Image (cartoon, rainbow over all chains, first blue to last red; front, top):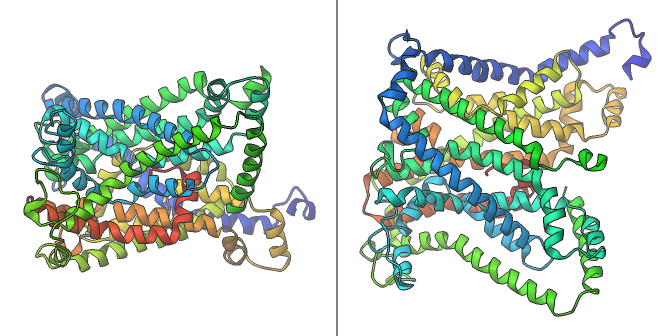
Length: 310
Length: 301
């Protein structure tokens, strides 16, 4: 509008005023970007090349931290393995379960609102409280889960005391929070035009065919979102693993997740340089995995314009 | 938001009704019955840990792990709750105050800053705006721990370790995700609004505060409940930054309680119940914003 009033060659006072107002509105965020994002990211890379105990100034060591973590620190490989193991199981299982539940919820009937509420409830439990509940339910001596397993003729296991089972226990705990993903999928399902499914129904497509060729492709953008968030989140899992296994990943480093290792080096040993090297590697790992997911997304994520062109 | 959802529900309900007349009459009810059965079983599984938490909180500590399972406490020890509250090393009311202080401060800071910044990105034009916005989106990809260590060093140099400042101050400068969300909301508002306000001679701040802000109230509330929930659940930052027990929020207090009293399971569950309860109460007052918000944010809650 301003352009109509003023001559195009001159910047009108109104526009200048609005630009100034614009800078003032986003000023807090510019400060945040500089102080709490740009500086820390650069500093992380710098610290990772130093020996830094916080008390003394950082001392340049080049790639020494990276060399020693990969060659002389078995905990690095163990924690990387643990985190990869956790992500590789928890994310796909979580996706499948939440999609299944969303499909079940996607109907018009009384009581759906109640199910939605119930599925969301676990997200309200503080992570520490939720973890302690699971520690008690999965207790190896007289815990509820083992007793129920024994009732149906299976033998109980040492959920959080046996290194073989501890990670699975953590994964089961993560599945308790699957309801949030379910509601995201459900919102995606509600976006699918009913007319499309009806048209296919009239053309003789059965329930499975409609699911396979309409619902599933149209849900792929939501799936991509849940997948990426799930991977980023599970690479950074900390609280549950820390409450169960402490900084050493009891039992026998089986719950030593990568974030726990970073915490141990940074805030127990105050080896900031070493911890920064670990953090930088996590950053790169997440970057590589998400870029790979987005790259492959072209192959399986539905894009509207593509379909129209075909 | 809710209105759109409502009309959508009505439309689909209508469609479903149309469709079912063409179907064999028994298949649909049977399928629905099966669905409900599965959903009920899953619901029980989701709620069960809460039930077990409360039940265990009411049990005598020696009766937590009994053969066979005790599905109902006998005797019911209501006094476990008062014991947990008065436990040395678990000053419940102090922890509660700290949690409320922390969560409220972060919520206020986030809501104010993200609303203002989101508005700036959406409705005001200034050189470099789009580049800045792309940068903002790019920061969403950076895992928190990468910025965490240097930020810790920074706050240490400022002498702020052992205080709530490192936990609260950054919130007042904005949060990439909610800035993005607010921008989307402000962009959805009609241009005529601002023009009318300007014709009336309202300044930028007044236009924002009196005209635009009330229109995005649902988004502000969604942001508020999720930020509050996030801060209430936050464990990592308090663990790193706080040192005195009297400063702990409930999440950290509960952890300290557990590390100290590893065998007092019923008290641990009483303390867990007390930590969870305030959020359950909040949820039932603001349920709409939690559940609608998931659509908007899709975040892990």
